[in-house]
Structure formats: C-alpha cells, structure tokens
Length: 474
Image (cartoon, one colour):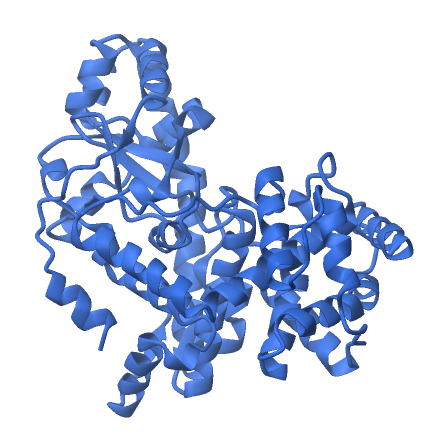
C-alpha cells in the first residue's frame, strides 16, 4: 500500500509538470482499481466494470489541472475520484434511491419549486470526501476509519485481487481520453473532440461551410466589431460626448464584460433557477444579442427551464445511466431513423443514423454528467459561460446560454455554480445606478449583482402534470 501511494504520488507530479506518461499511471493504478471495481460491483457485467474503470481514468486525465495538491496526495485524489464514480454506479442500480430522486425532481417541477436534495460537492471537499468514503465502506461492510486516507486504504485492502488491464482495454482508455479533452471558451461547436466519431461524409461540406462561417464571424468580430464597440464604450465610460445616447442604446455587452470581468460572475444554487426567458421569436432575441441593458417586457414572459428539451434530455440520460438502452431518448432517436429522418446537426457535425451512433452520443453526455458529478461545474469549460439576466425586480433568470450545463447542475443537485450576468433590465439598471455616469455606474452594478438571487415565484407559462408524466413515464 505504501509503495502504491509513493508511485501514484510521483506519477501525478510528473504528469502535472508535463513530463510524465499517462500510460504509466494506467499501468500502476489500473490493477488495484479494477480489483476495487470488481469487489464493489460484483453484479455488474464485464463491460460495465470496464466502463467504470475507463471513466475513472478519463476523469483523472481531464481534471489533472484541478487537483488540489494542498489537500490530498496524488494517490488519495485518484482514489477519491474512483470512490465517487463507484458510488454513482451503486446509486444508479439502487431502486429506492433512484425512486426518491425521481420523485424529488418531478415534484419540484410540477409545483414550480426549487430542487432541494442533498447538495453535491466536488470530490476534494473534505466533508464530501469523508461522506463518499464512509458510503463505500458501509457498502463493503467495513467499519469506517476516522480519516479519509485510512478509509481509502481500507477499501483497497478488501479487494479480492489486482486485475491487470489487457492491452485492448488500455488502448480503449487512451482513445476515450483523447475524445474527452477539455473544451475552452471560444471553441467552435463542430470542433468538439467528443463528437468526432459521429461525423459523416454526407455532412462534410455543410459542416465545413458552418466552420468557415463561424471563423469568418469570429474574425470580423475581433477585428472590426469589438474595436468599434470598445471605442464608443470608452467615450461613455470616460463620460465624454454621446454618453446618454450610447446608454439609451443598451451599451455593448462585450465591452461591459471586458471592463467588469469577474464582477459579472455570481454564485447560485442551480436548483433554485426556476425561470428562463421566453422570446416569442428570434427577431427580438437577435436584437438584444449584444446589448447589456435590455428594454421591454421580456421579463414578464418567463417559462420553466426544466420543462425544456435540454433538461428533459439530461434528466433522461442520468436516470438511465446504468443502462442507456432503456432511455426514452434512444427510443425517440431510433423512431426518427425508422421514419427516414435521423437526427443530424451541421452545428456539431454529427449524424445519428444508427443505434450504435445514438448510444455513443448519449454516452458523451453521460460522461459529461459523471465529470460534473465528480468535480462540479468548471466555469472555464464549454463554448461560453452559463448566462443569466437580471429582471426589473433584481432577480436572476436563465437565458439561452449553457442550457445543457445548467440542466446537468440541476439534475445532479450541485451545491453551487458560477453563472455570468449577460444582461440587465433597464428598470433595474436605472434603480441601481441612480443615473451615475460611466465607471461609477458599473461599480454600483457590480456591487448590486452580488446580492441578486434567482427568482423563486412560478413562471407565467403554465405547465401541466400530465405533460411531464407523458414524457417521462411512458
């Protein structure tokens, strides 16, 4: 045990310094982890156990930069990831726990209430690590020790045997690791590596055209649009001429974001976000696209984000993560194939024209959920930040940015996430700034944003109990 600790600590250190080989980590940690998975999941198939081990290594590789060296050794951090992933699997096959979770989610949606389960924290948080280890010890019928490293040693010591990974399994792990490289802000959607295997020659031209359009727009924005916006914004910020006219136009959002930076970030409990903006058509949404101050009655037309397709898609995957062949999404996508209209997206460059492709697609999102379940939401990953708007009453509501990620955070019942304010209602702006000029107005806004909370009253759009049940209990 001492030798394994020292070896994994050394391997993690070399990997973080950029000089190590991840294959060495797999060679060292693979056999004991495979033994632990076999010991804790004896009823699982060989394929499922291999998937759990594969996920553990993918999660470790993807989040190496987030390992808090000050709290845990490299060995303990890896093992905490393994314990959380194993516990997630055990939860997925626990019919009582699953029924309680389903009932909690559905009641919250039917009654327009926040989701209020036990908050989920990242694996490295001390009290979360203790709880995870105690849960696994109880499953293994071990009396838990008093500290996390000792409990991890207890779990490993109870394994039946080390199970060496065959070369084919190691190759599959490395392929999955390559697919799940982090996606940072600004990346083109069709360049996400996780969807590369789902591309199709029939979409090649359309996807390439979409890629060119994306990059042309990006270049124009960087070289023409943003410099012009910044020049006008600086006049307003420095209280020069045209100040009132630019503010009346709504202020350029990107310039405000550059100036305010982290002051636009707000911490919220994701389960409390029960309202989203509902635009009647795309025209109004495009008109507001690059404005920071929004006029009108958009904040009186709010809907329930958890009834949208993104939440339903994520909820379905996590509910059936132990066996995605039972998911409603698979059945829906298969029906589209049978009707001769398989799901395709030039935006992502994918074509789901077979059952195997659909399952691969669902497993991509299943892994995203496992990643967030272990480490929480990484505010630096994804094509852009999760966006919210501030209503005239100073309450946060969801906008059409990061809908899948906010759905994941809600389904997983994360304790906290960071969202970015992308727009505010003019009524709230005027109330907070008190007509102060330039930078002084932004200072007032920055201070006021830290006091904002999600709106908790029901949205204006009615949602029926029967509609939800038809979608998720057929």
